[in-house]
Every structure is written in structure tokens, then in C-alpha cells.
Length: 148
Figure 1 (cartoon, one colour):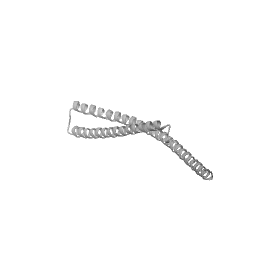
Figure 2 (figure 1 turned 90 degrees about the vertical axis):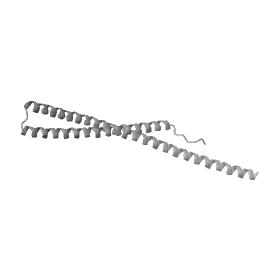
Figure 3 (figure 1 turned 180 degrees about the horizontal axis):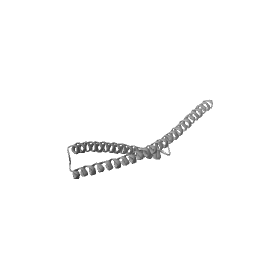
Figure 4 (figure 1 turned 120 degrees about the horizontal axis):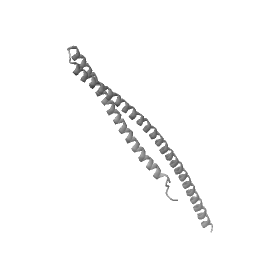
């Protein structure tokens, strides 16, 4: 009997490779999300520090043009936080979509693996039947040879 060969083996290997790429992409997105969260935290800290600094300097008396510069800078920091929060949301959405793709690919792979296992089981059953048939023929041939 010829050796077992799963006809969809190439497809299974391809899907496994694609799954690996998807997981790498998800890892890259997770790293990007952490970096964006850190940027948000840093920008918020900078905003707080400059806001406290402005308040302290205003108590001690500060020219209005310097106050305007501080307020403009604080406004830019605030817009940066908003922009980073939107970027974080986009990254989180991309991660959710990538997770769904990974789940689907895992499902496809496990379906192919179940099919391969089923076909392998059928192959082994057929192999056992052939061996039993060979043994029966051998025994009957040997018995016939002795009878002659």
C-alpha cells in the first residue's frame, strides 16, 4: 500500500504560515498601542506640570503675553492628547479585527487538521484490512500448497 499523503497539506502549511504572520502583526499592533499609551501619559504629565507652573507664575505676577504663550502651548498639548487618543482607538479597532482574523484562521486550520486525522484514520483502517486480507490469502495459499 502506498504511503499516506494528505492532499491539502500545502494549504494547511500555507494557512499556518499566514497565521504566524497574523500573530506577528498583532504583536506589532500591541507594541504600537503601548507606545501610544505611553505618549498619552507623557503628554498628560507635561500638561499637568506646565499647568501647575503657569498657575504658580500667575500668582507671582506674570506678563500677559507670556500667559498667552503658556495657554497656547497647553492647548497644543491638549490637542495632541486628543489626537493620540484617536490613534489609540484606531489601533485598538485594528487589534480587534486582527484577533477575529486569527480566530477564523485557527478555526480553518483545526478543520483541516481534523480532516487530515480522519483521512489518516481511514488510511490506517484500509491498511489493516489489506494486511488481514494478505494474511488470509497467505494462510489459504499455504494450506492449499500443503494439501496438494
